[in-house]
Image (cartoon, rainbow, N blue to C red; front, side, top):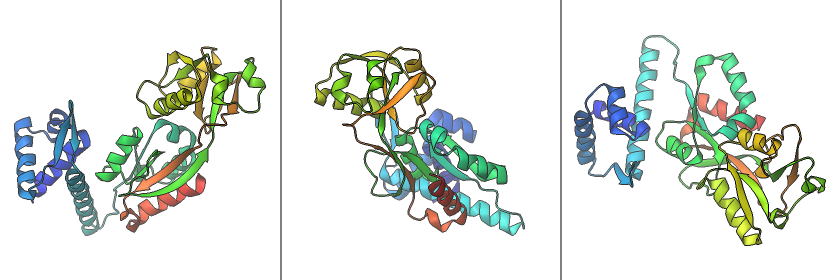
Amino acid sequence: MSPDALAAFAVFAEHLNFTRAAERLRISQPALHVKIGKLARELDRPLYHRVGRRLVLTPEGEAVARFARAHDERLAQFLAEFAGAAPRRPVVLAAGQGAYLYLLGDTIRAVLAEEPTRLRLINCDHRQMLAAVRTGQAHLGVSVLDVLPEDLTVAELATFPQMLFVPEGHRLARRRSVGLRDLDGARMVVPPQHRPHRVLLEQALRAAGAGWTVAVEAEGWPLIAQFVALGVGLAVVNGCVPPPAGVAARPVRDLPPITYHLVHQPSAMSDPRITGLAQRILARA
């Protein structure tokens, strides 16, 4: 396989967009199509396919992207050692907003204080995190996972109950805990449609026979919490989220706890830099 084609495919796998990948590589889109098409023919496997308007890597494409990035990292490490310089390759961590805000902050601050170039961060949802780890774009990932991936190594970080955020003057604030039936008729602050938390909450409320309405859709726990503080509605959030002033947090009895997981390739722990960061994340969580 051509090293040039492998490097081009690694960039394409990161963007999954021919226009952006070609711009980053500073080549034309037709030239990038030729490189990736030739690579697929050499391997006799499709490397990506379309799902609607999106491009998605096949499992073979994920494996090629992972190999391409590992090849590039080994080459960079060899050249650094050959030149007598310390390797500058950062460890890449992929996680979502909640993990960065409430779980990983102390670890990131400590690592960057020791060596600012040691760590690179990717902010993404859980699907993007899994894709980043599978393709080698990220060495470690942290997220809430509904289904544990069989092809990756997974470790539990922390588990939290699901909490109802309610203004302190609300009748439910006088309870020690609440049930889903208590939310019948409530106006709720919820994530946008099709977000995993929104889907699971809707299913649970429907199963409990609790009717509710959308007060507002909000992206991210801080904004959801702020809307509750303003009196816009009630919200169900992960238990790691601190309630703002004027808001009470009550556990929801009939919702399952939320667990954050640390994810990596099975072979990743052969790198002492990745192992060190993973151990620090696990210890602080």
